[in-house]
Length: 302
Image 1 (tube, rainbow, N blue to C red):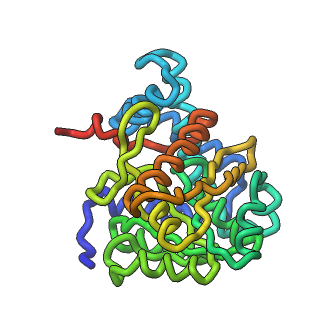
Image 2 (image 1 turned 90 degrees about the vertical axis):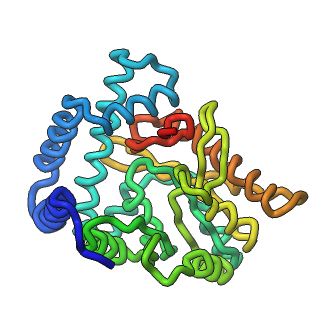
């Protein structure tokens, strides 16, 4: 893969490298305050990402555009997003015991019971809270898993991110530039009773499945519902959010696959069921939903 990247990409890569090197060596509270300060600075500049976050949150909450309540919510949302980065820099230096102790879980039995019965699990999650911490918790309680990672630029940043996640115990497949058999690999893992974790509330490609989400149409990835339909794996939605200085992982009951209908109809029904759970979880914890991109089809350029 070409290493050509913009100056901005290289600066971001250098910042991540410095973060993983320096942040674990410094006291936690002062560095957390620095990241919160940076979040507030970015929020105050009202750039495109901040405005998009507010637009998305307005649809989720019904708050009026430009209202003080919406602006305060977007500020909290950006602080939550920057907190995620602060935490991932510290995660490699945390003990498994600390990660498990600080992870407050609901519904973990849905994973434990299915795996114990020899049935594969697909955990599907929106971009909320700290998904890397949730992955570290899952590994820590005995369930190493496979996931797919977006190919970041430059390549050095992508490799560092993969190394970070592999260091936490995850198997990471590249979204692009790999052997082209990601779905087959994921299907093999769950057919053998393993666990797969996938982001699942944004996919604006031709392969995405249309769903109704907060009253408008968007697309979600086909992978999680298709894995459930084709392999019989249990598809479990997971909602992640912050609880004080700790984290919450709420694993919901399995999204059922309809007994009747074509494969396409079953996949569409499962995708909508997944979106319905995400909608409820995001509505309850909007400040921890990190969606700074366009999501709904009507928001896309024509």
